[in-house]
Image (cartoon, rainbow, N blue to C red):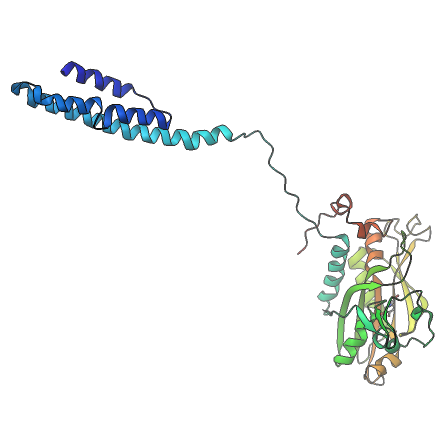
Length: 343
Ligand code: DAH
């Protein structure tokens, strides 16, 4: 019998288990009540009295080694089935799954930049409605009754008599602002505008503008020029020069259009500036006293300047984009080129 115990001890020491089945096999063979060790304990009663004590110690020792081995095997099988399997699945040579981060739309990048430039010099951002009445879109802005801009050609009418239109410019927000707020006013008004135009590389029925309004005592054309000069240099670079050409808008007097030196050719003449060295970027002027009075602001006390620019135009110039339609097609091949993550 002692020979049998030694043999079993050796078997137990050698036993290896990698799976649950092998573990169960070990349990049945050496741990359970019907195991060989259990049988040996049952046979103890047939052992001669003088050997009983010695045998009992040997059997207990065998039982303990079986228990210890069983615990060790459980641990082995657990690691084999969890981490070892994972290690098999894990291919460190695989390239990581790429995540495509969305990027800001170029028009958003440029709008944010324009707003930032003006916020730094004390302007606040104001929003206004896109569906507008005739008063705020035209009449209060000093448009004559028969001004061509009111024509069905340019304006999307939503209702007739009284007229409701999709605003044709962001200048409507100037009026709403002056009606609701006393000067000093220093505001910037970005937004969507709509015109009844055929869609082409250079025109669209839907685009974006930024309006700027400054009303206070003693505001002169010099202030307008200085602000625009600052803006042009911040937006297009320190060497940028500006020039004003006389123009006409019903709501400003005098009115002007502003050009900047072409930043592609630095004024030498190229395709973008059509060889002139200059590109037009915005319309501006001193707010017409009629407009101030229309909004209940005393034109004897207050003066102001205003200007408005198209965000698409500035974006096209800045990034060398030659077709307006690209902005609205949402082709990711176009959009992915503007990897600027501004907040
Ligand atoms: N509203 C004009 C347009 O849509 C742009 C404009 C010109 C705005 C002169 C102004 C301004 O505030 O003073 O073409």
